[in-house]
Length: 186
Image (cartoon, rainbow, N blue to C red):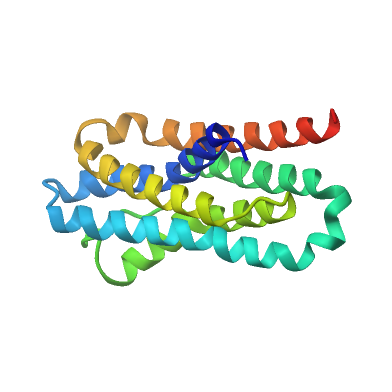
């Protein structure tokens, strides 16, 4: 996989985490170093583990769908990207009054922001990409964007939060189209 494509995937997957971190930064202001570490670490950990889980699941079905792998990757990435765009316009989160960097709230946010990475891991398996480097890049990118989002939360979160999530969704759809076109034009 091309390094630039991998970086775009990592950034696109981290957009949910970034948007949630913006909101967390707004609600926690001022944000402590401990809160930055907790949320950054957990979001990165979950973002890194989910594609590995998806990749392992994808290996078991790879031989069954090898002829259609590019369509599967396109479909999964388009679904995830479309879901991200849809959710950006349908705000169904309730504002949490407690610290979102602690306890079950943090675990739930970590899972919610990384579930998209599961589908990306499956997509990478069906197109024959080794998962270890992408998982590490995805985890580090998610951690960095989470910390950045929390720090920026008080300043731009309310203005850009939804736009960032839409941009991430559109980027995933674009990457799915790129994979599809590469295979169709071979």
